[in-house]
Length: 159
Length: 195
Image (cartoon, rainbow over all chains, first blue to last red; front, side, top):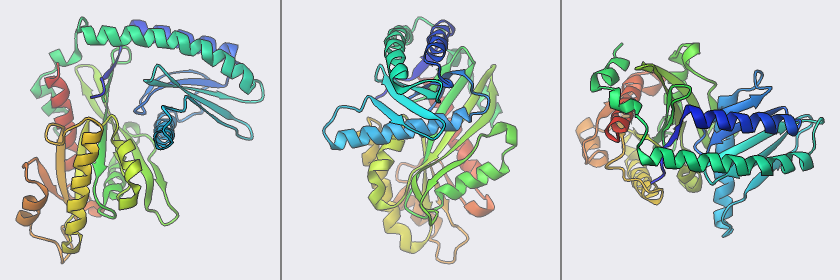
């Protein structure tokens, strides 16, 4: 079964840093990191006008559908996608087989530059994700669920 | 699978509404969307055909409150019920934390219910899940229709493992939140059990 994704402060900071650099160096409008199941992990850049939750879910759906097509064609995975709009373009790539890196950019940047910067960022993100998986699998971190009681859960659903 | 974020103190889970075509999966989500305070919900997205049949999925993000300082967020998804969208249904089940099977109470839909339930079970196995161990509830929708099958019969056919079940009239909201609460609670209890 798929391993649960757990995010800790330290790794999130590292991911944020990678995204900030990617955002700056690729002249992007915004950068998102999304769990393959559609949960937003982090975002950088001009995101105030964006519905990040919806974007994450739809992007994950899109990646899942593309993965389904790949399977039908006996391809392992299509590692990247590019959508060209009139104003905004979207570059989508799968990182470390686990998360989706999305770069939104306009005429201030180019596909070539974004691809170049994404490659570097993806390597860095993969390293952070590897550490994260090991950390969460080792069970060395205290779990929020150790503290939560059945009553806490019951109370959440009391009207 | 759930996403626990210790940095933003959030527990994120995915719930999928499954069932045959036109059983009321989207209606469940629409009712929840309409009755939830704006601050507790995000935009509802429906990827539907021109005739408002679900093409890929509906999506509704919901916040259900806090536990010990952690925000609980649930992403509700529906699958397209029509038989030929099976490839899409498999994709939507990826990473699921809890399932609601919405059955159509009408006698003439019994076969479709059974087929959909079998389809759910086999699609879950393909994704590495087992319906018998996954947080799972059943909803019998359309209880107000004259051709509705008696509850006991539905239970026998569609709920052999006796998971929590709820009668519903989704457009009016009867049973809708009871179903959601039950599955959400099972999901959190299961997460707790895992630790």
